[in-house]
Length: 178
Ligand SMILES: [Zn+2]
Image (cartoon, rainbow, N blue to C red; front, top):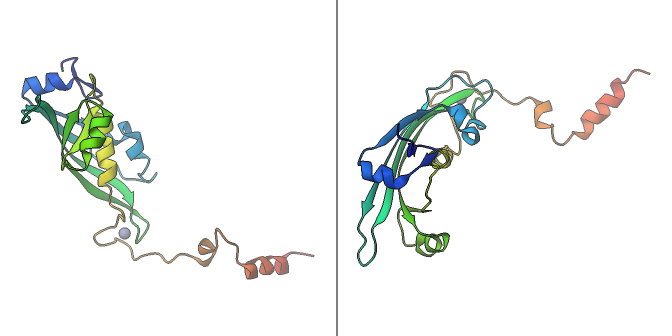
């Protein structure tokens, strides 16, 4: 792979000039912000498969602008919110980004743009963008389509965890040996 086409220090203009997609596979462990959401007892999952394409597009009345298309598929281990056992959710990313010259331009044009705006940089961290997009693709409430085990009712002492029940404290006093 060309020195200019490393995903963490990607030279976007070189990618656009190549006319070819840049594709790769990245292990979940290499995306630490995403991996932090996986339960410790998570089953092993295949690496995240991603593909990025860059292209210059003419803009009426202005200079050409660089666009990036990012696609990714991931299998993400999460905790099922119904039975509290690990589950694996499929994440899918398919987004277009347009690069602008500065943060000020990005802010000014953000409202009227359907695509996401990013600030042009000589070296671009594609894996950081990939991780951001996967984090946003996480389901709010991960759940098995059908739980392997019936949901576990939380035991009374778990429910009382953050606020000890006054009667429980009394009961403790009562069972204290003299
Ligand atoms: Zn479940």
